[in-house]
Every structure is written in C-alpha cells, then in structure tokens.
Length: 284
Image (tube, rainbow, N blue to C red; front, top):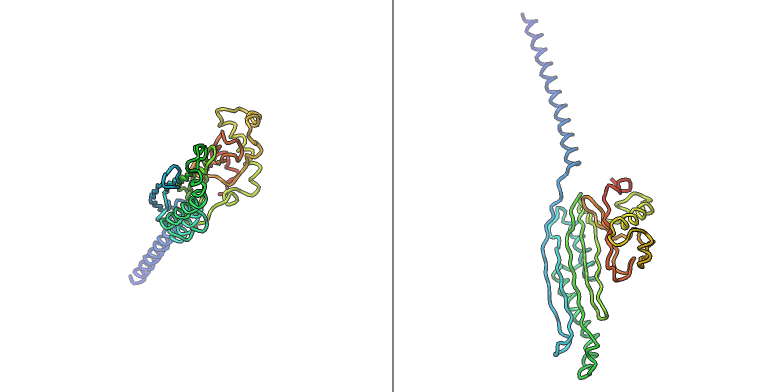
C-alpha cells in the first residue's frame, strides 16, 4: 500500500508540474501575442489643438486712406503624448508662420512681436511717401495698403504622423497678391519634420515623377494631354517631387504654388495620388 501511495503521489506531482509548464507556455504565448498586437495595432497618438485668431488693421496716416491688415487663423497643437516632440513641432511651425527668429517664443508672444515688427516696417517704408502724396490729384493711382492672411490647420494624424497645412495670402501692392499653400509632415514620436527620403524608398524620384505627370493629366478637367498643358503655358517638365506633400490615410497630395509650374492665372496645382499607385515606392 505504501509503495502504491508513493507512486500515486509521484504521478500527481508530475501532472501538476506538466500543468504548470503548460500554463507557463501559454502565458508566454499570450504575452507575445499581446506584445505583437500592441506594436502592430498601437493606438493613435493623443493630439489636441487650440484655435488662435487675430485680426487687426493699422492706418498708415491719420487720413487712413491706406492701411496694413493682418489676419491669422491658427489651429495650434498643444497636447501630444511626447512633450519633447510637441515642443519641436511647435517651434518649427512658428518658424514657418513668422520666421526663424520667432521660433523660440510662445505662439502668443510670436504673434505680438511679428505684428509689431510688420506695422513698424510698414510705417517706415510708406508713411513719408504717403504724406508727400497728400493733395496730389493723382494719389488714387498710388495704393499703399498691404494685407497678410495666414491660416494653419492640422490636416491628418495617421500612423503617428501629424500633417499640417500652412496657407498664406500676401498683398504688397501691385496688380494682385499671391496665395501659397505648404504641407509639413511631423513624426509625432520624435518631432522630426519628414522629408521625401523618409517616406519613399531610395531611387523613388523618376518613377514618382512619371506618376505625378500622368495623374495631373488624368485629374484635369481642362487639359487632356501633356501638350495641352504645355500649350497653356505650363512647364510640364517641372512637375516632379517638390517636397510640398501631404500624407493622409489613403493618398499623398502634392501642391505646386503659383508660378512654380504655371502662369499666375492658373493659381496652384494640386495632384492627389492614391496610395495604391505608390505601394512599390513607399517605405513600410
């Protein structure tokens, strides 16, 4: 009986050990599955923004026939999971809005400083001439007003990339002002501004150029061939990767601003490429 009892006890111990080993193996497997799922399907980064608005005009003289008008509508990132990355993105955006000399300032301080500088420069460049024009019968032909409109907004926050759009209209006298639009893509984990070489595989330029040129023809409602664009005054060979691109979930958009590839009358040219066409060119 004693031998039988010991044998039975030994078998129970072996069963418990096998059970514990099985549990351990399954725990490891579950852990790896969980880790893989976390990496492969990591949640989107938290991004919060604040809307900043500024609009004011300053008269050139007491008569206020001419003025400088400044208008800003800025959606500004204020919360990001990585605070160091957020700081880098904020600094870079402020430099895009107003210039590198303002990048170390808070946005509100940068706006105040830029407005003061713009008004002071406007007065210094134009007031003496405006005062000489007082009483001149032909003064209507001299327009000294200036205008600066700026709009900044978040376009997309996909795959840990924040895509930001800066649109500016500037009128400094003359027949017309000029409107420009630029995109900036930031790695939300590092704050790094991404370039084309960070997004596309090595040697991408020639194939991407072909895709851009073919897509602009397909998307055009006015022209149906390369020659049509050339006849209209477009510099068709200048349609190539220019660094001004927006990364969204389903597409990559390129913008060419006035005079970049076409006469002013055509304004900007935007080319939207489905990511399916770029599958072989994109880095994973």
